[in-house]
Each structure stands twice: as structure tokens, then as C-alpha cells.
Length: 134
Image 1: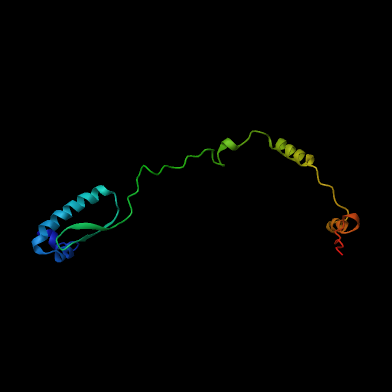
Image 2: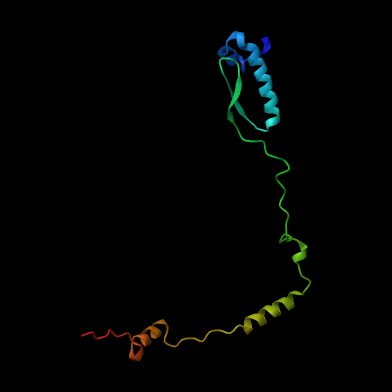
């Protein structure tokens, strides 16, 4: 107990506790350290009463469980994996690509541009005319 009392980490605790209660403090510190080894917290701030009883004043984060993290398993191979490569000759790939572009129909061009469709809606039977409510 004499070495523990001289330790700079525990000297403030012994100064706080009445000398008659130092055995209680020593017993409480032993209990606290046994609990700390089994609790799984990274950091714990302890406090004490004038009678020598030690209790945790602040609990830090829990130590990470090494079995909790599992590496990500790929469902598909990576893009640089040879599985994605092909044995089709490049000329055949170019031929199929050009045929695909040739078979896509192009929309017909409008002769009047964008404004003609708007003009057609505002003239004649399609025009929006305010009703006469008189």
C-alpha cells in the first residue's frame, strides 16, 4: 500500500481519502481493476468517496470485438479479372457494333422546327379561346 500511495497516478486518491479508510480504498481499487480487466472498456475514469469506495465516473467506448468485422466478400469478380475478357475476334465485335447502330431507327425530322408545333396549337380549331360568359 505504501508503493501505491506514492504512485503519482494514485496519490490524489489517497490524499482525498481519510487515512483510516486507506484499506477500504486499497480493496476498492483491487476490485475496480479486476472489473476493468473483464468489462471490455478502453478507458474508464474513476472517482472515489471520502470513505475510500471507488466507482466509475465515466465509461469510454467498448473495445471492438475482433469477430464482429468480416471482410467484404465479392459477389462478382473484379472488372480487371480475366473472367470478363472475351475470345471473340475484334473484327467481329466491330461488325456487331456497327450493325446494332444501323438497326436503331432515327426519329423523323420536323420540317418546321420547334416553333411550328406551338403555332399549330394556337391557330385554328386547336386554339385556346376564352369563352364568352356574358
